Amino acid sequence: MLKLNGVSKVHQAGEVQTRALDGIDLEIGAGEYVAITGPSGCGKSTLLSLLGLLDVPTEGEYWFEGKNIAGWSESKLNELRRGRIGFIFQSFNLIEELSVYENVDLALEYNGTPARERKERVTAMLNRLGIGHRAGHRPSQLSGGQQQRVAIARALVAGPAVLLADEPTGNLDTAHGDEVMRILRTINAEGTTVVMVTHSPAHAAQASRTLHLLDGRIVVDALQAA
Image (cartoon, rainbow, N blue to C red; front, side, top):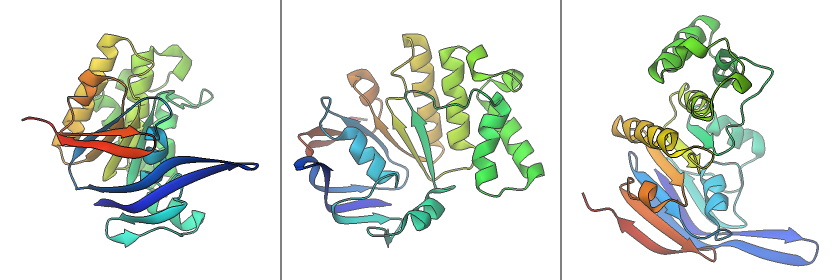
C-alpha cells in the first residue's frame, strides 16, 4: 500500500544541510499496524510527514496505493490526501473558535461531502467515541482525553485508508493514553492501516510491527510476537 524506494530527505538552512532521512526502503501493507520508534531527532516525524504527503522526498520514490507520487504538485497531493489519509497529532490541533461538532465536520466539508451526509457521519463518529454529548462544547471546555478523542473523530470521519498518529498519547495521562491506544487497536482491527510514532516501548509493543530509526535510517524492522 505504501512503498518507499531509496528515500532521503535533506533540510537546507543557508549553507548547512541536515539529512533527516537517509536511503529509506520501506513497504507497509494494507491493514498493518506499524510503530515507529527511535531517539529524538532520528527522523521519525519526517518519515511520518512523507508518508502522509505533507512533505516530499529530496531523493527516491514514494508509491501510494500503486502510484509513484514523487514530484507531484502540492494541489495534486492535497487531492490524493483528502479522504485517504487521517492524521492524529500530539497537540490535538483543534480550532478553539469552533465547537466539537464543527471541528469534526470541517474534515468532511473540505471533501465536499453533502450537508445531510456530513451531519449523519459526524454525529455517528462522535457517539462512537463517547463524546456525542459534548458536540456543542468548545475544545477548551474538554479534558485532554476528550480533546484527543475529538481529534481522532476528525481524523476518522472521512473513512481514511491510512491513519497516521504522531505521539498521540504524548499530552495525556496514563488512563487517557491507554484509551487512545485501545481506539487505535480497534480501528486497525476494522481494516484501517495505522502508522504511529511513539517514544513509549509499551505502546510500540501493541503494534504488529516496529520500525526503529537511528540517524535517518531504519536499523530494526521487526514483527511483534502474536
